[in-house]
Length: 258
Image (cartoon, rainbow, N blue to C red; front, side, top):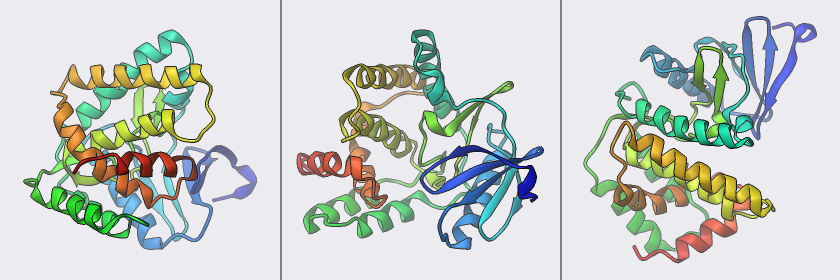
């Protein structure tokens, strides 16, 4: 990787993506366990191997991943026009429904990861923690391919079609839990302390509606199943230390009758 010939493609909370010819290097900004980087590489390659639109993994190093470069904007950037919001919101749901029709057998078990996250969730009432663990363990196992952080910012619109990126949280598990994670992210984007104006919150609300419609056009959408998983994924989200969302998540968890 020659730093003199690279330029930045994008930046997130944990990593920066740099272009290097036909490759995109995801370079982690702080000390990350190399095992986690290797796991993200394995997850991404497993998704690509199924034929689902994910980047191909080209290299795994101790602090970075070398990926197939995907040219195109994020879906998030295409949502500010009425047509883009209407169209891509529907595609957002359809693409996740397609993902949920694929086996995730090569991915880590979602059950174990959710339970570990609930056990580690900071300042969670002991009784609530136990009830959430019981909820997870009460469900018959599923082996659906789940992304774990599916939202418009993790989808690139390539000339050939949408490509889903950032597979670090990918698991084999319950489709409804994965959908609940997306619902939670959209709800937190509206109700969290982001200081967004009313018009932007309205856009996210409409996106949420179109996402559900798109998903339901290809797979049954179960509101009951999503509601079952929402408290679980909310507790899990507390581990991620998002200051703008913490008050909303705690207030929402406190209001739940488990």
